[in-house]
Length: 178
Image 1 (cartoon, one colour):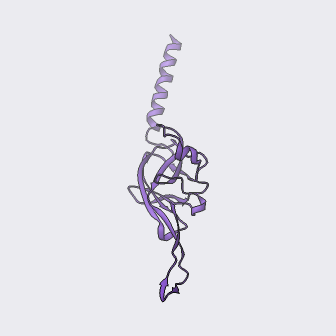
Image 2: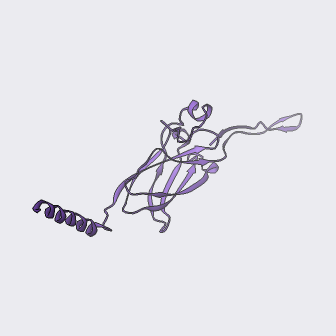
């Protein structure tokens, strides 16, 4: 009988301790990976200057993390040739921005991406919102934000030339998907 009453007291103690600690959660480090992917193309990597990423608290606007994606453009075969599978990974080795954010409760965040960062005249901004849950990492492929458009880099004209009293202007451009 003594053992039974000790179990009851122990159980009540555990329940009471649980009630006291309810609501006094500590901040949990939560890893967030963000990647920028050109629409119908590959990831925005270091060769394009990366993509600028800003993570903000949706309610207050406070910046929680910011930086540039860094790394390669990803595996062409996986991204461009193989059929996409639900929950399949496509970003292995691709450029990413990684941050650890300490949160003590679920938090709605705005994630904004501008790319290509090296070509400011061609930058396009895309964004999304997600809920971050304390201690639940958004790693692996992470959050992939699609960037539509092209990056156009004028190579020439350097100057016009005259041929038969008419101006001849050679135009060259390097156009790549962002």
